[in-house]
Amino acid sequence: MTVATARAHPNIALVKYWGKADAASNLPATGSLSMTLDIFPTTTTVRIVDRDLDRVVFNGAEREGTVRDRVVRFLDHVRLLAGREDRAEVITENTVPSAAGLASSASGFAALAQAASTAYGLALDDRSLSRLARRGSGSAARSVIPRFAVWHAGSDEQSFAEPVQAPPIEMVIATVDAREKAVSSRDAMQRTAMTSPFYPAWVTSTAQTLESALEACRSGDLERLGRITETNALRMHAAIQGSDPSIRYLTPRSWAIFDAVAQLRGEGVLAWATADAGPNVCVISPPEHTAAVAERIGALADVVIARPGPGVRLQETDA
Image (cartoon, rainbow, N blue to C red; front, side, top):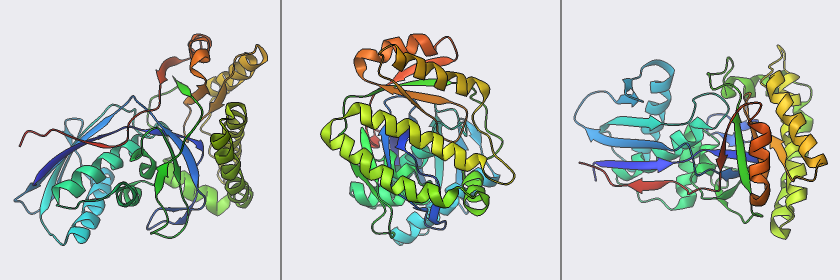
């Protein structure tokens, strides 16, 4: 096959990935737990072409610079695995707000991993595909997996995502600001690890937190999982703010949503807030409480409801 199209969705971490044990291979300092969404898909087509250079098109515009460089490095790794040198055209349509803390790189590189590996003739199982997607963006390892995923830390062979069971959960996503953030996740992660005095404690506590979260998943304890989710997010943002110079992703409107969620819990609505590296806030709740959460949070930001979604999938392609 010389052309392949794949679709993937972003994932939101309940136990966060923040910090690398090895930057070259995107090996995480700790494991993490996530929910793959059923909204905001990324669709990528990879076509093998007879030309000297790779071509990268993103949302209708040909890209150069950092975006193209990341894609080409990823394609180089796929070519190495496949034992081929052919160049490719990569065409991506992305519906996730890019670089806004809503996991656009996760869906993007999961889709690219599936499309590129197929176009170059590699037949990868989910574990191998997750390891490959991780090379492009760490959290992409989780977008390969449907619904809920745990991404393991460890060596290159050990660091992949696989499915886990979780209590019934939906997610209200509140978009506070869809603009590209001033400091990328990659740069902020590096600065946190190098300069934040809270980073070592973050790594230690998150390893313990993940075990507790997995226990909550196994027992179906949504309230315990919710508390872990919110606390873990706040610890991550505390570590980030401890960087020098400090990085602050959460805005006053972000904090207002956290406060509104706490108020909802006081009224008997089960809801817990989390936020990736950006100002936008996601609120998990059981399906029967999602509408109440969306109504309250909708007064503070644009909201959309997400449910557990599919893993990466090949799509029909017009040759």
